[in-house]
Length: 90
Image 1: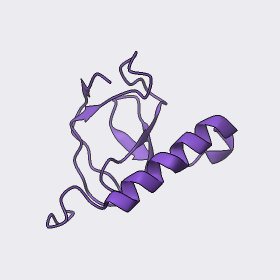
Image 2: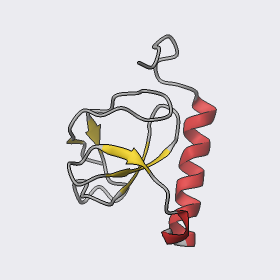
Image 3: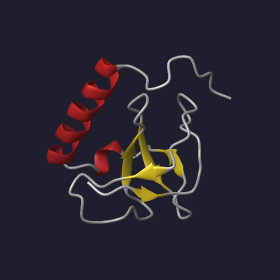
Image 4: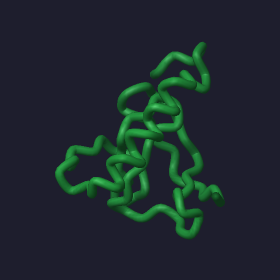
């Protein structure tokens, strides 16, 4: 997967500041409306029009196949634990 730089924004759940995003297929940079997971806490997010992360509130729009991939990725992230356990959200 190729990482793509994205504008700095905070995860609304844990305060993590991602500066790169990658596509699970490795073929495309993020676009407005694309789903994302916080790599630190696993919160489901969406890219806004400026490619900043925002809370996602549209679960009925997600296909079953995508939901399975999301839940498996969230389980991995949450079982692994935070990337920076000593960092405090601002």
